[in-house]
Amino acid sequence: MAPAAVLSVEETRQTFAKTRARHHLHADVDVWLDTLEAPMSDDPPSLEEVTQAVFAMRQEWTGKITESLVAQRHAQVLQQRTWACPHGQRLLAARPAPPRTGHTMVGEVSLARPYVYCMPCQQGFSPVDEALQRSERRTPWDRQQAGARVAAAVPFETAQELFAALTGRSLSDPPVHAVAGELSHELGVLEVSPTAAEIAHRVAEMAAGKTWRPVLVLAIDGALVPTRPEQAKGPVAGRRHTRARRASWPGEWQEAKGLRVSRVERERIVPLLSWYQVHQEEDVGAALRRVQEAGLIPAAQVRMCVLGDGAKWIWHQVSALFPTAVQILDYDHGREHVHQGASRQFGEDTGQEQEWVEAMMARLFWGYVPWAIEGLEALQPRDAQAAEEIRQLIGFLRNRERRLHDRTARKGGDPIGRGGIEAANKCMSHVRFKRSGAWWYVEKANHMLALRWAKDNGTFERVFEAYKRRALHRHRSDPP
Image (cartoon, rainbow, N blue to C red; front, side, top):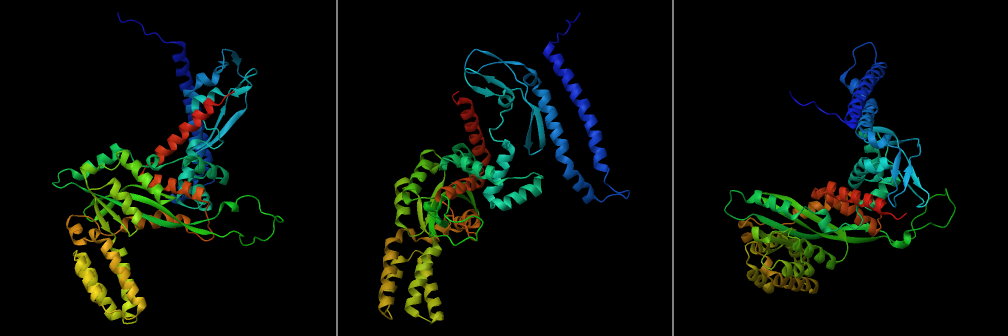
C-alpha cells in the first residue's frame, strides 16, 4: 500500500490562493471584454479599430494579471503581521498601510503593503518592498530602464513623445534626467565594454575554418561636442516670466576623444567595443591601457592594425601598447594634406591640380614615399606660400613613411580608411549632441556618451542591472 501524501498548511493555503486568484481573473476578463466591446458599433469593426481599442485598454488587463500574480506568489509576506527589526531582535507589529500603486510598463499594480516602524531605531520599512526589490523612486525599474534607453537615443522631449505613443504611459523629465545621471555615474570603458570572453568568442567565430588569423582594427579619433562652462549653472538674475535673453556665457567646442575596436569581415567592418569621452589625450591612453590589461583585445589570436590621423599622441600610445600592430595612416587624411599643397601650388588650374594629386596619391598608395618626396623636392614653387606648403608636406610624408603602405595593407585585408569610426562619430555623437541651441555641460555630455556607447556595445542591460544592484544595496545598508 502506497504511503499517503502529506500536505503542509502552507501548500494548502497556496493552492487555495491560486484557485481563488484564477477565478477572480476569469471574472475580470469577462468585465474587460464587455467594456472593450461596448463602444464598438454594430457594423463589424476594422482590424485597426480593434487593435486601437485593445491597445488603449491592454494595460488595465495586464496590470490586473501582474497584481494577481504578485498577490499569489508573495501571499505569505503580504499576510504576515509581525516582523523582526533588521537592526535588532525586537518583534514589531505591522501597521496597516493604504495600497500603493506602481505605474509599471504593463499597467498599474496596486498592493496593500504592511508597514513596520521601530521606535528605538527610528526607522521604518516595508517587507513587501524588500521582497519585490522595489525601487526607492516612485518610478519602477522597468520604466526607469525604458526611459533611460529612449532618452539616450533622442532628446528628452522626443523621448517623452515616443514613450507615450509606444507604451501608453507618461514619462516625466526629472526621473529620466536623474536616472540617466545615476546610471552613467562612474562608468568607465570596462563597464560599458563586452567581456573578454564575449570578444574571444566572436573572434573564434571569425577564425573558424580559416587559414589566416582574423583582422582586428583599432581606430582612434575625436568628435566635436558643443559645451557650456560651469559658470552657466545656477539661477540667473532678473524677473521671472520675461523674454529669454541670449546666454551671457560663451560656448566652446570640445573634442570627445575615444577608440573603436572592430573586426573585419570581408568588406564589412563590424564594431566590437567603443568608448568616447570629452577628456584629454592621456585619458584615452589610460582607457586603452585598461582595455589591454583586461584582455579585451586578444592580440595573439588576431592580426592587429591601427588606423589614425597624423596626431603624434595617437601613435605614441599605440606604439607603447601594441608594438607589433600594423600602423596605417588614414588615406583621406593623407589626401587632405596633398590637396592642400596642390591648391597652393597650382592655384585656379584645377585640371593640373587634380592630375598632380592623383599621381601623388598613386605613389603613396603603392608605398613609393621616397619617390613622392623626390618629386616634391624637384617641384618649383609658384610663390613663398606654396614653398612653405610643399616644405610642410615633405616633412609630413617623411615622418609618416612607415604608415604609408596602403597597397600592402589592402593585400593583407587591412582597411586604409577610418570610415567605421567616422560613421560612429556621426551616429553616436553628432546626431545626439549637435542640435539647435544645445550646449552641454561636460559632465552631462560624458554621461550621455557613456549611455550611448553602452547601447552600441550591447551592454546596456548589464549596466542597468549594476545600477539596480547598487541602488538596492545602498537602500539596505543605510544606517538607522
